[in-house]
Length: 305
Image 1 (cartoon, one colour):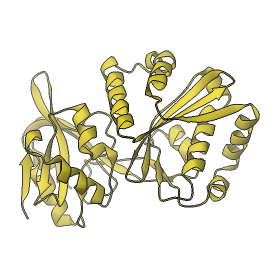
Image 2: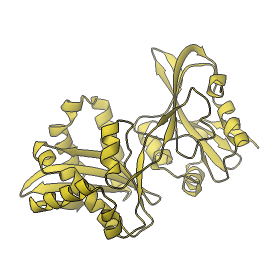
Image 3: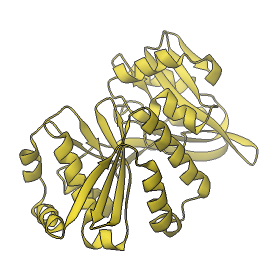
Image 4: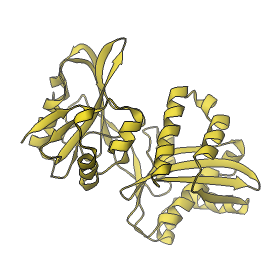
């Protein structure tokens, strides 16, 4: 078993993406194009001829390097075309660059064997497999959510799916969300670049909620390997009053029902947000975070029980 540490220029992107897609838990966050839009400095651990891969970034703060996930990547970690056992998990962690002042890692839901020990924190995410018919999925909503769907329709809300909707989402987000949540300008610009690249690749779905001629809410979904990632959901005051977000999610479920797609809410450990997604019948699918500073922080703390 040979695990190599490769710099960005040494990575074969075609083999990389094939490994991610063939892995037991493929995620768009780990695709080469998604990582490249964020930074051309991402690196990786690679097993043999891309049987398994582990992307990460070396960032700097005040000139001090640390190991991290890139922004807007809820889950990365180990992606493998072979079974992840205890031996493979520990081998990858041991190969991470050592003696950095901080490690910030978020591992995917298939990485439970890597996240052993008290220093790892379990984070929450909600997902909804869309294999059942729409009627079956709708019946699994909690009763209050079904009522809100019907009320939103009665109020005259309509949902449209836009083939080229990034510019409309961008203008709406700037007006109704950017200042309210205090999102840094560079993060908003990065989100926009990611969405533009996904749109070029035919891997973006933009949903627009309208009341008459007024747009009241938008949602953005990344599409990859039969998984819909809900990466933005924003409503103005009228959209919140009329339950526009509820109707958008309902119509996305209707559109992809009776298929192999999975709706990934990119959910939250915040109870109120998690409960909102669970009200659509979503189930919890935890992932794992390691966030520790020290100088120096010995890498072996990643493995400490």
